[in-house]
Image 1 (cartoon, rainbow, N blue to C red):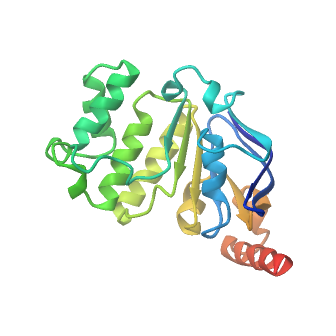
Image 2: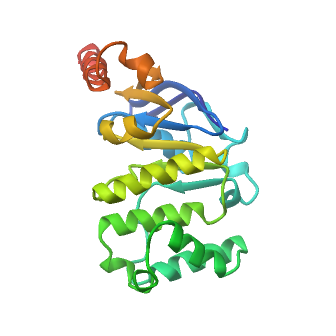
Length: 237
């Protein structure tokens, strides 16, 4: 469903991504885990057609994002929860998205309910939203077209414990419905609780990938993560 194949990206002589390869299968949640600056957002920008790779390829449903017909029905994305007009209400944001996809207004109400925003909250200007509310709105916007793949960058930022629990349940429900979910985060605990597979990245390189059990091997995932990222830092120092 989602594939990164030998993906590399060089910015001004600096390798932001170095031969990154992994796949996300239908019906699974894959955690894309790494410290800030590891290359996660760069990879997602290439995957969603916002940046071009120096080499390699990134595809959704077997095609580059830019070549998808009506991509909102195939892949839902949330790369920046704050990237909404602050003067529009949450309902207006979703209504505009629904109109672009040719969806009925009833879908807006369904999505508001899905992400736990009340009618009153939907009627408020986005500029007055908390970060957690913006995350919920952004996730809702990503799900308007009932996509088969979902790509989320740091969706747990700003969510309180109840909101984080809600998000994990939502992602599991999406996967159980056959969706391929790619979840990027630096929050190891959140990813560990929801992901079927984890891809660890550091300094632009995939350090390891597999299930939590495969990556831990008798240790905590945190210990594995610290060891691998520390080794990557030393090797590139």
